[in-house]
Every structure is written in structure tokens, then in C-alpha cells.
Image 1 (cartoon, rainbow, N blue to C red):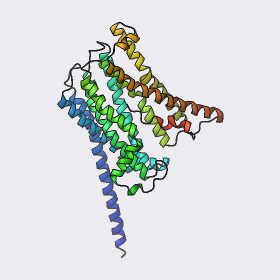
Image 2 (tube, rainbow, N blue to C red):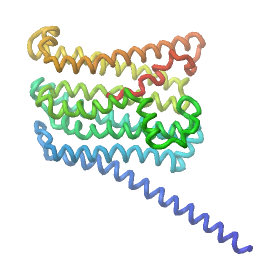
Image 3 (cartoon, one colour):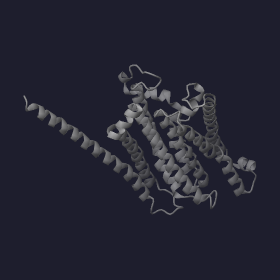
Image 4 (tube, rainbow, N blue to C red):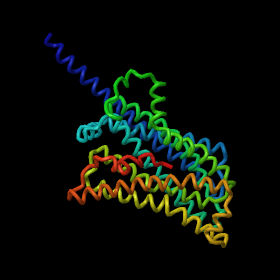
Length: 355
């Protein structure tokens, strides 16, 4: 009997060590998958000349690599947050649920996608806008359309994972009774009912938006799509705002500074951008801005309206939230977390802006 205790202790230590080894192995594999998929995608484009177009076979390969990259990055962040010692310390410090960890991972991946999109936009604008406004093109515009399209379909799955996990933990609309007993189809149906706009938005961008950049535009207007890629500049700040909220840092100066930066980048890249692009087009065809707008094809006008109108609506929500926060700060002399519904736009209303 006395000898059994050391044997039991040794067995537990062996199991713990084995679990740690498996965890480290999974961590290394995920890092290799993330770095490898992005590196291979970049190397696949090296032989191309800037004015080349992306063949369908190469495009499909880029989409596959994009799916591997975004899924692996999400899994890597979740692994760090849930399976490593530093992740467990952070969870304990900020009292994070598993659903909140997954939500933070989702927002980080969204920010990474936005950075890649903005990099693409800078390259396209630097190449195409300095040459022929309509007819110059750079292969990276089509290449990232293939690669980035995978993100919008990945994100539908990722948000579903966050939704289910948060619902089970009672993080959505308070305690969710019987959530664990719901079947998979019921959970999917509830997810679709709760998130119809963002799902439709992702399906629209991942399908029609992809086809527009790759095929429907007929190789024209690459400079314009460079600016469209740059619309994602505000997304990292939207993600940071959501992460700070999860970390209970709404009352911090960092939260306010990030919110103001988000407003500024959103205004510049999603509102002021459209008049500037029309000005560039009017200069190119040597007409006034109004005449240039009238000369656009009907389909182009409708697409611009669909893309522009929601931006004004979201910006108005953000502005109301910011004004509410500063009004509360002015009255109380210190920034407090918003408790009224008027603060909701800045906290959560723009969380799904990922066009």
C-alpha cells in the first residue's frame, strides 16, 4: 500500500507531461500551418509580372491556402488562450469565459485580414492610380480577391463557433437555459436568426464582391478597387475596441483613444474616400464630378449606393456612441462604462463592420 502512492504520483506526472508534449506539438503544427500557408501563397505570386492576371488554377490554390491560413490562425489563437499557461493566466486575470476567448481570437483574425487587405490596397493604388486610372492593373488585386474570399466563408463558421460557445456559457442575452441540450440544426437555425445581416454581408462580399473584382469588371478600374481594399483600415480599431470591452477596459483612456482613431479612419476610408475617387475619375475623363457620376453605368451606380449607404448609417451610430461617452465623462469628471442603450453603437453596434 505504501508503494502505491509514489506509483500513482509518477503516473499522474507522466500524464501531465504527455499532455504538455501534445499541447506543444499542436502549437508548433499550428504555427507551421499559419506561416507556411501565407508564405506559400506569397511565393506562388513571385513569377508573375505586375500586369498579369490570375489563372483559375492559381486562384483556386490561393483560396485553399487562404482557408488554411485563417482557420489555422483562429485555432492557434484559441490554443494559446485556452491551452497554454500564459493564456490561462490571462483568462484568470480578466475573468474570461471560453466564449470570450474565442471571440477575441475571431476579432484578432479579422484585424489580420484587414491588415492584409490594406497592404493590397496600398500596392494597387501605388501601381494603378499612378498610371492609367481605368486600365492599369496589378496582379495582387485579383490574387487577394482569391485569397481573401476564403476569409468571409471562414468567418461565418468562426462566428458560429463563438455564438455556440458563448450561448452555452450564458454570455448571449443572459443565461441561456437548455442550450447544451439543443441539437446542431437548432443551434445553426438560432445562429442564422440572430445574425442575418452579417451572414448575408459575408456571403455577398465572398461571392459577388469576389466575382466583381476578378471577372465582372473586365480588367477595368483597378485603382478604384485599391481604395475599396483600403476601406478595411478602420477594422483593426473596431476589433481592438471589442477586445478591450471583453477585458473590462471600457473606462480606460486607451478605449477612448482607440474609439476616436476608429472614427477618424472610418470617416476617411469609408466616407471621404468616395468623393475623392470620383474626383480622380472626373479628372481622368476631364469632366465635372457630377457629369462623371452621371456617365457611370447604372450597375456601377447601384453598387456604389449599396456600398456607401450602410457606411453613413454605421458612422452615425459610432458618432452617437462617442458623443454619449464624452457627455458622460464631462458630467461625472471620469469615463465610466456605458450603461444606457445610447452607448451601444460604439460598444457593439459596429462590431460586424467587415466589408
